Image (tube, rainbow, N blue to C red; front, side, top):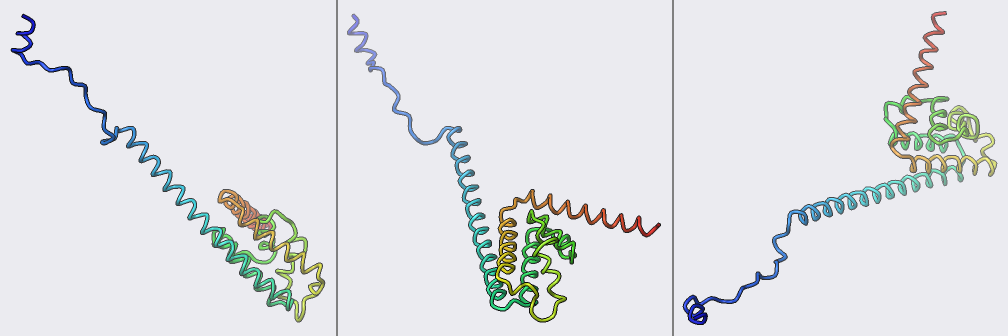
Length: 194
C-alpha cells in the first residue's frame, strides 16, 4: 500500500539548496570595502602631500646652498641681504604674511630667535642680518672662517627647524609675536601720556 501511495504522488528526494554565491555582497562587506577605499585614498593623499613637502624642502635647501656659495666666495653686504631676503620669503611661506612682512630690525631678529629656538640672531652672529646693510665695503669679522661657518650653521639650523615645525607650533609662535607687538604698542601709548 505504501508503494502505491508513493507511485501515485511521484515524490522526489529532498533537494538541498545550492552553495551560497559570492555575489551580491552582504551590506557589511560593502561598508568594509568603502572603508578600505577611503583609507587607501587618504594614505595616497598623505603620501603625495609628503612627497611635495620633501621636494619643496629640497628646493629651499638648493636655493640656500647657492646663496651660501656666493657668500663664501664674496662676503659682502649684497650676499647678506640676499640671505635675509631668502629668510623673509621662507618665513612668509610658513607664517601669515601680515605678521612677517612688517617686521624689521630687532623685531625681525626676535622673530628669527623665537621661530628658531635660539638667541643667536638678536644677541649673536645673526645680528649681521640687520647690521650688514649699513656697513660699506667688505664686512668686518666676516672674513674669518670661524665666523662665516657659524653664521652658515645658524641659518641652516633655522631652515631645518622651520621644515620640522608643525602647523600648531607655527600658530603658537605667531600668536606670541602678535602679543609682544601689542604689549610694545600699549607701552608706547602709556609712555606718551606721561
